[in-house]
Length: 156
Image (tube, rainbow, N blue to C red; front, side):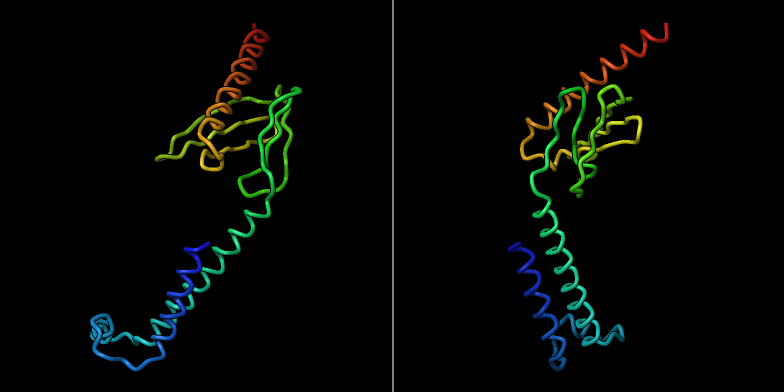
């Protein structure tokens, strides 16, 4: 939140600077050599930054109002948020889990659980501690292994 406020203050300063007459600052001289109107460019940059600050503040507020979000495995079902930014909770019967896949994208790990009605994804950055994410991987892999063994036995 502090970074958003700092960014907002910088953009307000840029808007105020856009209203001042052009002096011989290096950036302003470069804009003049490129036939750019420095005042208009700085005004657009300032308002764009303010809009981004408002969007970031709105996103921060939205995530703060999501409440307690958790993944629960038990009683033959998986209960989890429908998506990373959703208040809705989905319940997936353990028997409906078709596949569990873990992807590494740069330093972020993503678990994808495919089930009869679609898929649910869990992103490692959404968990407060690394250990909780690793426990979820282990529990989901155990479910996936069990379901695949049952499926293989049924195909014989």
